[in-house]
Image 1 (spheres, rainbow, N blue to C red):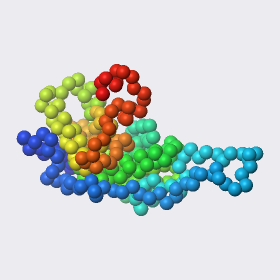
Image 2 (image 1 turned 180 degrees about the vertical axis):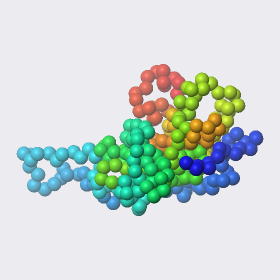
Image 3 (image 1 turned 135 degrees about the vertical axis):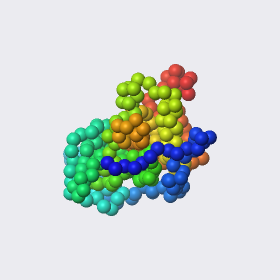
Image 4 (image 1 turned 90 degrees about the horizontal axis):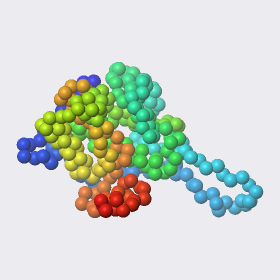
Length: 262
C-alpha cells in the first residue's frame, strides 16, 4: 500500500512521552471540530396540531433518520461508487460493515466502513456517527491512529473510507504466537499507552481499548500498529473531573460485587 508510517520514537526515559512529538503537531482541544449544525432537524412534536381528532390514525414513527438530516460534516459527499469500487467484506460490526474498496483512478486499496442509516434509530446514534468522523479527523496524522481518507453519505448509508491494514488484529496475533517476550510486550504496551496519552492530550477518550481494536498494517513482525474504531469515543476537556464507575459505562444495574469493586 506504500504506507510509510513508522512506530513511536520515545526517549529512553520517557515511557509516557507522546509517541510522535517530533513528527506530529499537537493541537489544543480548543481547536477540536465543533459539532455540525443539522439543518434538517425534524419537528417531532405533532401532539398539538389543531383539528386533531381521536379517530384519526396515529402518525407512523420514523425509526430511521430522514434523508434531510446530514450526518457527515464534509462538503464533498459525492456518490461513493463514482470514485471507489467496493469489494469483499472485511468485517462486521453492530452498526456498520467494512468492505475492501479500490480507488478507480489509480487502483489504490482502502477500507470502507458503511453504516446503514436504518440502524441509526435515535438522535444519539446519529450524533455518535458524526462524532466518530470528527474524532478521526481530529487525530489525523498520528502514526498509530487509523487514517481517514474521506466520508460520503447517500440516502441509505454513511461511508467512511480509511487506510487499509492487512496485518490483522493484535488479538489474533497474540493467539497465534501464544506469548510475547517481555521486551516485545513492552514495545506494544509503549505504543498503546502512547496513543492513549496522545488522545488525552487532544481531549479525546477512546473508551473501547482492546486487542481487537488495534490492527497491524502488514504481516511483518515489526509492522506498525494502528488504533481503530472510535465509535464509542468522546471529546472531553483535559483537567475536567468525570465519573468513571461501572454503572456509567456498562449501563446495567449493579449489585454488591461491582459496588464493592468500585
